[in-house]
Image (cartoon, rainbow, N blue to C red; front, side, top):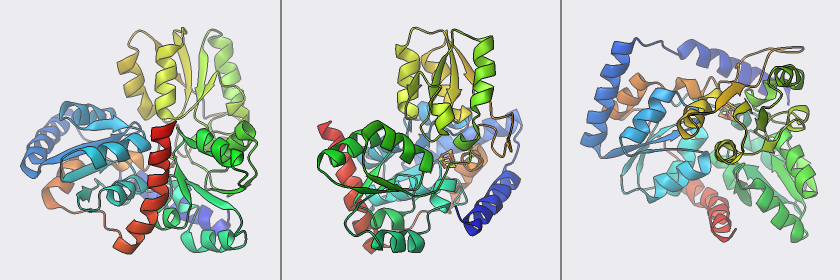
Length: 345
Ligand code: SF4
């Protein structure tokens, strides 16, 4: 990644950490009551990601919204009758909801909720790179801007990426992959696809440490290790299961183990504990040699979604997601391609 991109991510991280507000229990209850009343008044529904605060996930479920991975969030927002979607996640998720539901109002608790993968892949630079390899199919991760999606042939989420790359390899297509390099390496290893890989990374998953997992495994030898493929290769190599957030939740239910070491954002623990109340979940270590611990297993931009700004956004209508309609129609095509493909497999 270039120095300019690293600095951009550093600044965004610093700003995100500074913007987080601690609420008392009373303040949280008051905010929840406001959100419930405003959802009814505005005919809105909450579409939340697994990495948001447990308070937000619980409120989404209680009010008829959804808690899901980015693919399911996009589908839910499109298919739900509500004309106003309150997307609690990071900006590319709000943009994806708008692309799939252009006639709906899409609000976000904070428009400053970035993603290091999205920030690492500016459209001008990425487009110039793609122009050098016109024979290659451009496949981008969902964690990208609307403009980067519009430059691509396929958009994929981590839950469907292996299947899409396997399909493209079968078609004899060579690929440009962006922006997550760890996921790219994992996909190449799983599918043997011919891939040119962009050098982005997730600030949360990059920090998991194989040495720390070895130490934790010594304490809990019966534990299964569940890893998101945005993690480094050495961490992926230790996994019993590698998968997207929804695949990790499913694996925790399916495997006979009673203890799990989880290498993904700890926001997922709300859903893991809800679906497997008798099992024990441990956060994979982020400390150890080379640790910087900017995130400590929790995305600082996901943490910008807070009960008070959910209520404020609904009340004021601020933080609405706007995308140029011309860009929407271009970005829709690779997204629709993924959704159509997901119905076939
Ligand atoms: S956890 Fe990583 S990939 Fe997910 S939004 Fe945060 S920075 Fe982006």
